[in-house]
Image (cartoon, rainbow, N blue to C red; front, side, top):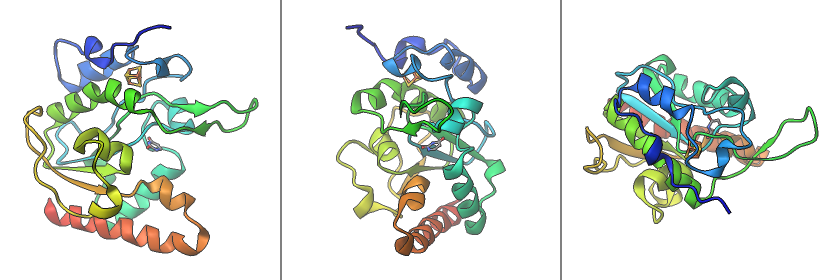
Amino acid sequence: MVKYEGAEHYLPGHEDLRSLREAARGCRGCDLYQDATQTVFGAGPADARLVMVGEVPGDREDRTGEPFVGPAGGLLDRAMEEAGIDRGTVYVTNAVKHFRFTPAERGKRRIHKKPSRSQIVACRPWLVAELSAVTPEVVVCLGATAAQALLGPEFRVSTQRGELLDPLGEELAAAPRVLATAHPSSVLRAPEEDREQAYRQLVTDLHEVARAL
Ligand code: URA
Ligand code: SF4
């Protein structure tokens, strides 16, 4: 079995966003680079005051190389707009930067799979480096994977969502406040009768974010 050492080894000497993005293209810090098409790094202004962190790229993101451009991204854009947040001002990224999926038949959409704890830990240096480069005021964790990457494995989105939490630790150049909320895909997957309520709750949480900026 090949032993993977995590992303740390692939970090460039210069930690500006452009160098980070370039270096991440060649990351082999875990097994996920093997089957995915490309690294999907974060995107958005380098001086964004708000960073949104998702889980892992999906099928569309894997093909285009951009985060949140598929169905979940569409829903997120709509929710941000309703909350008064302009996506053009937000830096959007993922906790894990290569698509993890269950293979599908040719031509079919490949189904995303949740990254493992070890893949989340392996990829974390990229996320920490992005946050250090952007130095946002607020970080939004979209769902449990992002929350656990930044707030630890004990964190429960179900009980602590929508609360502005204390600044993140010393590891980062700046100390942004954090808020965790549901992942937009969980809204899309909710049973039809619950979907509107799940969406409203996401918008409510994002309103809280807009107020904090
Ligand atoms: N889901 C995510 O977590 N991230 C994306 O970029 C797309 C879908
Ligand atoms: Fe590197 Fe992250 Fe991709 Fe794994 S998922 S190869 S750690 S960029």
